[in-house]
Image (tube, rainbow, N blue to C red; front, side, top):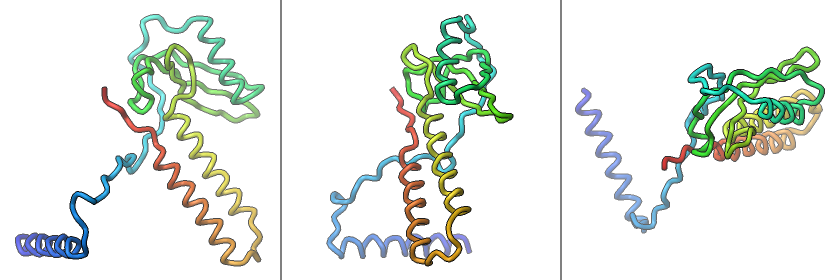
Length: 179
């Protein structure tokens, strides 16, 4: 049974290949697929090891506090110990990371901050997730606040715009570059 199924699949794929060649497509003219991001992009997570030999300096603490307060004004900031290494999506210039939490108005905002080119910043992976979360928030707000008597075609057009934004954003997922 399995052999006949595999043979059928092989013959069907051969027919498709022949049909595309008959339609005038040349193998050399086929577009090269660009690398796609993973099906399930990975979120930044808190790492507790390996710890950096020298944990964190006062200057680095002030740099991180300034960065977090720019993102979340009037917040109290918690900074984890510094760990060495970064996810490949943050690039080869990333050397260290901290997990930072800003607390404001009984809410917590957690971010992975990366040390890239000797400067603490929101790395490409964390930035991608922040933008994704903004798009999802805007879509949810739109769905909650839309007029119930809105014509279907207007609703559907706006929905398609959100879907397109999410797909464009998914395509912008930071790609691991191997040296």
